[in-house]
Length: 193
Image (cartoon, rainbow, N blue to C red; front, side, top):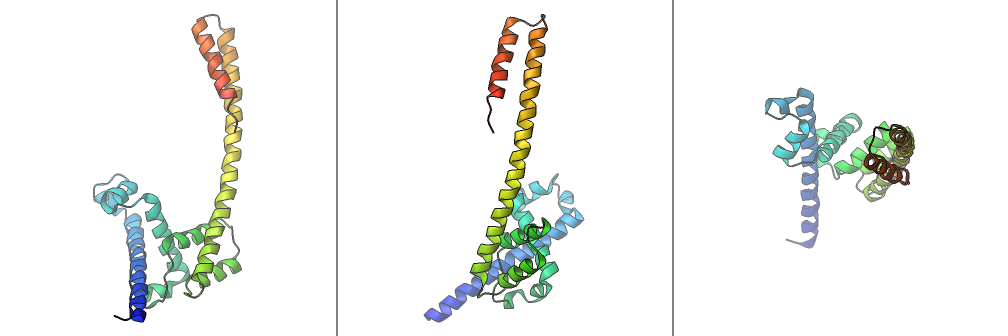
């Protein structure tokens, strides 16, 4: 086999591999929409994915999300999967779908990225841009989560101080309990977030 043919064979094999996740995503969407996994003896969809398919729930959800994104935005791709010169990976498409869902990008930018994702000549650049969007989105989400953690920590500290005061003001507690309460209060109030 010549070098050019081998390179072409590798690209075609990669494309067939990528088409597999699209087909799996489609089936998983149907399994979820019909709750078939319950009929197969699983209490949770997560258990079905892990035990029967060997997939994490995150991977399954990303495949479904990516499939639904293609179904909505590139439906013609589903008719001729193997003829398409490039099928993006499910993680990148799920990233784009999440960014759109959360309002992190506008319609024009989404269209530019989507078009680039399905153009083999632009895929490296667009994949990097989609991943950068996810990173920025996660950073913003992480900051919001940290704000919530700080508020909850402050509330717990305040409650612990109040509980400690109540313990000390109640004479029926033994010294051991009061000392333990002091230690616990010190531990809780020393937490810095």
